[in-house]
Image (cartoon, rainbow, N blue to C red; front, side, top):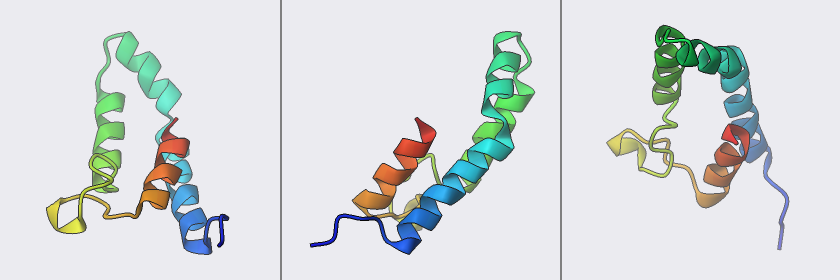
Length: 79
């Protein structure tokens, strides 16, 4: 039985990490706290476009359609 992530699962986690890093989430949070909601809304749009609003939902319904391991990898990256 193999307990290590596959290359595809590792790539998925890496893609989620890169998306969050590119979105500069800490800056968006600071802006939101100061009353500027535009950066936060932009982050939400990027996450939605990547299918991370409903990661466990099938692709046919707007989710990413991952298996439980991919879902866990995404949640680790999101924090």
